[in-house]
Amino acid sequence: FNIFYFLPKVIIFVTILMIFAFFSLQLIYNVRRVAMKTYPFVLILIRLYTLLLVILTGWLAVLVFKPLFLNTPIIIAENTSILSTNPSTVSPKLLATIATGKNLFKVNCASCHNKNMKADMIGPALAGVRERWSDYPITDLYNWVKNSSKLVEEGHPRAVAISKEWNRSPMTSFNTMTDEDVAAILTYIESVK
Image (cartoon, rainbow, N blue to C red):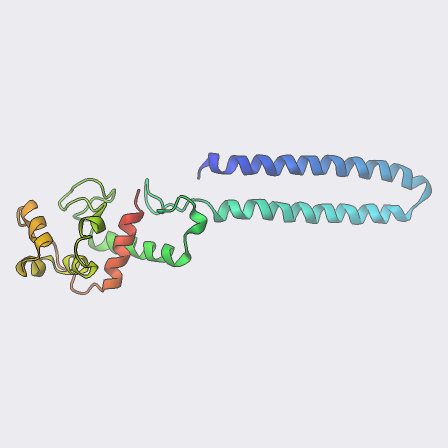
């Protein structure tokens, strides 16, 4: 919850509501004072106007506060957020992919890779992993995640370099993972800021 995100919208809403209420109450008071003496049917109009005021206030509240909650930056994990600076542009499909990736990361990767993605742990930091593999087809990265030993045995240049850098410590094989699972994990990794 970021107060600086909500505060300007709340101030605008309250200001508009106060101005609207002030003039409405002033009008109701003046019309009612005159109407009570001469035109009793105007009291019915005043009640209708008051009802309209309540409906418009509710509509205005929904109009102002609904986007506040819809556009709130969605927190994925501690000190992390979605890649987009404008969360309203994040599709529900991307959010679902990130949530799936987060769960898969926790179950399969978090024991060796740091959750902040920037610091090494038992395994290397994962921030920027797609960029480090960008010279090769994305399927090579998927295959690395699923079975790194096999890729090293085949002599893949990037796989061999990582293996040497990490003293030939093999990464756990995840042969049951699909390409979609690996893609979801990578999307989650990119979402961590």
